Length: 207
Image 1 (cartoon, one colour):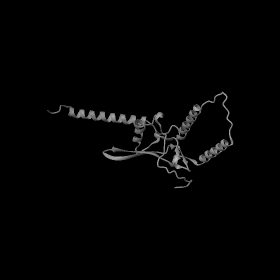
Image 2 (image 1 turned 90 degrees about the vertical axis):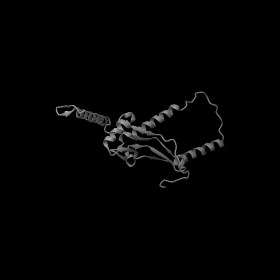
Image 3 (image 1 turned 180 degrees about the vertical axis):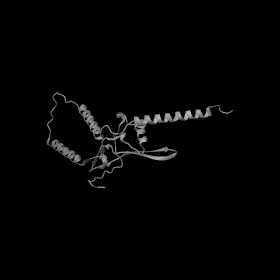
Image 4 (image 1 turned 60 degrees about the vertical axis):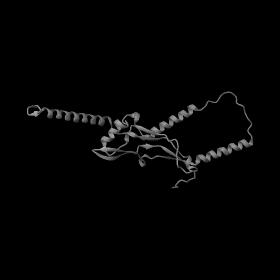
């Protein structure tokens, strides 16, 4: 059966044109929504400020957990000369151990946090890499025993991660990481342990 025509144009063609127009309009609407909600990618504050707040909260919790000394009189033991000597040795050992730890701070301008993923872009498989230098934290290196080194909280500003495509950047901030929202702006890493570190002592400058 032939398509009905109106004014020289078939109804089938009209329907197809309407569907195309609807698809284009919907795509433009979604694109506009992502563009607007993705924000500019500007950080609301520095990672150093976030780290300082975390450290402040940790110190406050430590103070609150400190046991309160009782007012009741305590039994007083007579300390012997040997006990005093042992305490002196312990204090000296603690001071030496503390002096063996060197703290290094991550310099954002010279550092980088990144991610990579695979995506299909116009029918072609590509590797996408996102990077930011909005990263901060500290590393405590124990020179006498590197295996005893520790890493403090590391903070990355997810909002500032960028790839080679601005629309993708806005989509990441808007719909993937939601980092355009202040509550999801920062990624916080709290390392629990280190592995494959030697226990042999090192000196500053060793490689």
